[in-house]
Length: 114
Length: 113
Image (cartoon, rainbow over all chains, first blue to last red; front, side, top):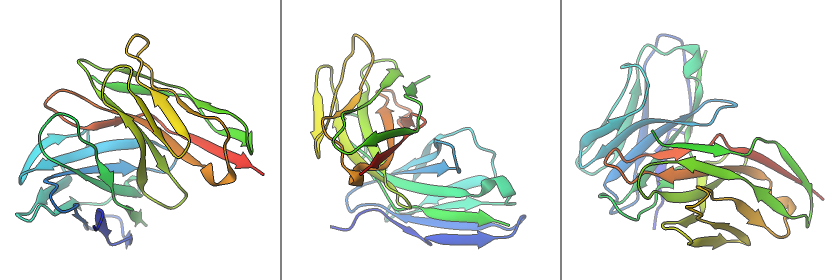
């Protein structure tokens, strides 16, 4: 069974441009989470999507946005890129609902803003 | 809100040494607790988990016990190997509706031959 897949693996953008990162969850998972891991820092929660809706959002500016498609894949968009947006962006997926479950992570997209 | 405090790194050990990485948490209700591992250049892999008090999670020789009385979930391994060198993250999954994994800051472990 395929795990969580992210594309591209690496992305280089210029300051001010827009970046689009993609995530395909594990089959049967309807929740998708996005995290930012900047160099030397821990994982910061960005967004949670479930059943096509944004359910929760971390403390990031509005230029970080995303969506979830009917097939539960997800896209993270970062507008007006800044140098400090350079980081590893990790996507995770899980089954929906509360209760005992676990999140599985993809390999990440390394975004470099120059 | 929920928070996880993790032992500061980096930690350097010799092969076959005993490993403990401390993790304590603050959360309302009854969170699920996890340890994730991140090898160089890779994403996060779930190492082990525990979903209720006194549960012990174990995998690949690593163990951690959910201690509600001390709000702790310390990671241990009796004999580390060079291949265990990685960054280890303690995390909790809150029991509230705003479901998200809250991570500790990570502990870099280096095991020397």
